[in-house]
Image 1 (cartoon, rainbow, N blue to C red):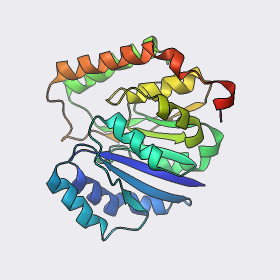
Image 2: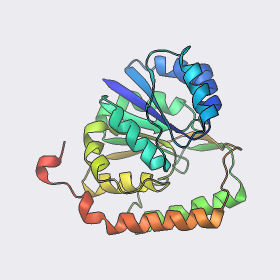
Image 3: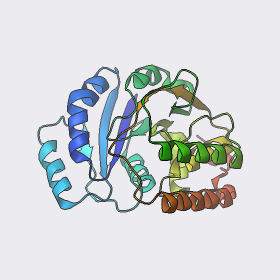
Length: 247
């Protein structure tokens, strides 16, 4: 079994490299599976790209960097990383390592038992080591309510935690249909899986908010997210697979 770990990054190269060296690579080595790390620069400036290229020289060969800069949202970068993978399973996580990697140790041995595993900050047993700002808590709570009712995802407590694993064969047909390249892409992925009867397992995680993460324009961000949700809902028929497309 092979696992690809995709990191979409936007001017967080130093944070990513530091986290990989100190925490990530030792943890990945201990998983007992073949893996690679795929870094997808997503709107990074030249200084950040130069730093990443230099740092890569001293990192293990299984770390790969997309040859092409991927402008656009996080969803576009994740999609690009998944398409670059040749692994049996793909996952994405954030450069800030907000989700404790203990969850990965619990998920990886069980990967073959479901089509998707998602980290959750709201599932029973989850712990938030450092809380978000009040504004982010309000936005998270509002989007959570909207998503669960708008898409029938009432059994999923947290769709937006940046820590998700997929059986690549199951998610591959969606990558050709994906329309959401921004922050709502998680919803698109989970909605597609639910519509086609694929299994989703929610796993409680220990999560620490990144103090460097913020919204420059909260109202504009929320409106853009809502418009993406409407587009996903409208695209429902396109997510439904034919029998010969299922894997």
